[in-house]
Image (cartoon, rainbow, N blue to C red; front, side):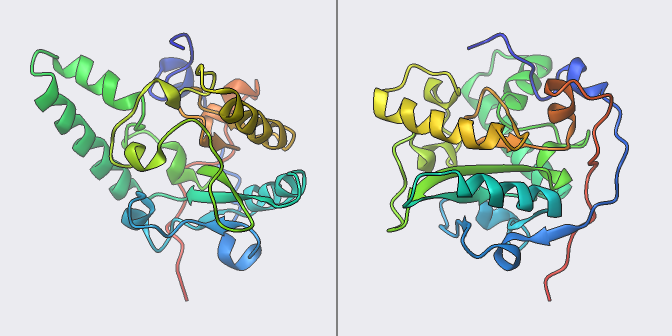
Length: 226
């Protein structure tokens, strides 16, 4: 899939933001039934201890969406809130790796390719708003469902065609992706097509795909852990 709005695309970046001032909240306190990943091979370890934070409405919507899942299946949040500082670090690290791998790419190409999977840090990246999150599905026994992508490799910065939401993955993984899409879409979440696991509400990408006049979440104030 190539024809979709990129995170750094002008269509996304020109969407105005009218911050609504909604508070951030901790999933771990708001809904203990939603699992938050703690494995060290996920980038959540970089944004810890704030990666379990999202806007209050987003957590409420996730809670309702999870109730629509089949019995024995639940969400596993891989990462929620991410600070601007962490976003910048991730962007620059991926850009540097791509530059070493593709020495023939100019600066423009490097930025474009980096932004395909890591939003630019200097223009309200989705995770910084508290409205965007990465997630997958798992069983009550803690076993992740087959979604067609090795997420361990993804978090090691190895992306492939299976990352795209409409990728030609095997039937079991396709069925699981459709399950995820169905319950999240019913709560108004939108998906970034290059990453089946990335969803958002209230940010610029959501505003564009939902045909809203503006985003309601800008970069959030860093929350505090008591």
